[in-house]
Length: 70
Image 1 (cartoon, one colour):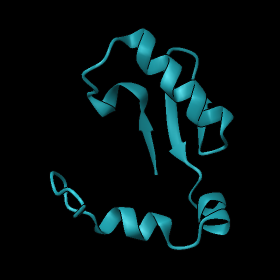
Image 2 (cartoon, helix red, strand yellow):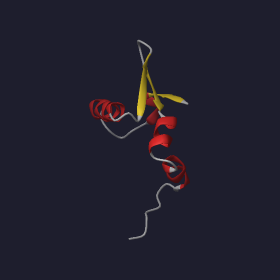
Image 3 (spheres, helix red, strand yellow):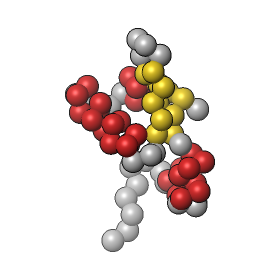
Image 4 (cartoon, one colour):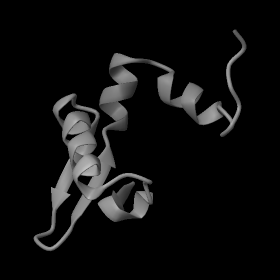
């Protein structure tokens, strides 16, 4: 599914957010869809699953705020 860049509600500046999305795009993890006055972000799930099988399921199973044991 696709989300707008502003829908992530990140506690960082717009410049920093743009940088992070560029790094993720260049790494092949996301696609950016340009609608002229806004951009959409889409996670490249099939490509990620092909390269790192099970990673997205593992990340989805993690509960927010829970840290891994050391």
